[in-house]
Length: 152
Figure (cartoon, rainbow, N blue to C red):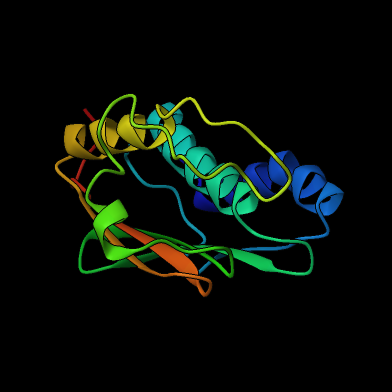
């Protein structure tokens, strides 16, 4: 998977959605190289996180996605200035079918499956998800995926 190519693809896919809500979208990659990781699953992880971040960010807010390599792992973070969550809500995020009782800031609906899929794919890669959120301030999803020396 070419990191720059994936970043550009995510920007092309999600910029129109962000623009329609008047949400700023910044996508960056701190490493311009090709790595061995399942591209389709990574794109779904990244896409689900960006989609949620845009969904729960009000007009005039901002969403930032960043990919970097460090310590033989891929680090992905998606940060928004959205509605945020109470601490109790964070524990239910990755449970299959637990849709958010709060609709998106423009009335967008949720199936409750996106973050369960993210967790499943991250687990398949022996990765780790960290979530920090503050009500009315925003949320940050950080994912770390270990990299192997050679492609299988």
